[in-house]
Image (cartoon, rainbow over all chains, first blue to last red):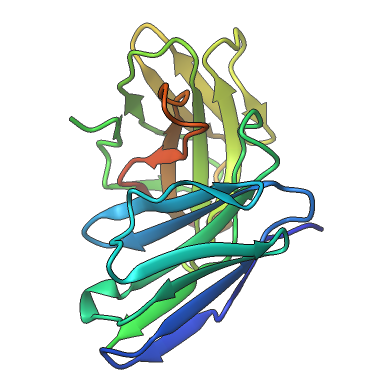
Length: 114
Length: 119
């Protein structure tokens, strides 16, 4: 049963600390998305990659967020320095390709910044 | 303007009854995709059903069906024979074709509808 995996599932940190979230897409999927979910904003796109190349990161605060795909099996989202307003659930999703519609989501990382 | 509108913050249904969750969308594109996802209290996002804008038949997946009315720009989710395990938040989402300077697009989500199923 192929699934997207994310680590950690929960992260509590203090303001100013660096946070790194990891995602392993479904094997063979070449498109990876990062979404953030908050009560106020709902689900919003942060960034996405195709074949490891960033296609759109306009949803990310550039001064503190960075997203990379070091290889086809790993996507990372880093926040440095973290702020309380970054508290949210961060989802990674993968899809077979841009021409294939369905995105499959990981379980999410619940981030709390104190 | 919102691209995806879910007007029902919460819905209540009894077990074994059918329920319809509303979704309207706004796009000027002819080619687009519509999705429904379920988010139970555990937090994961579970894909339920997909409808392409050119699909002539309404999509069905088990107890889920999508009532697609293109002219009205609505894509309502119908759950037949509700079960207690259907209690969750349900999100409608749309994928539009990429703009000229983009290689692809992500999903645009509605605010969600909380469904509560009682016995």
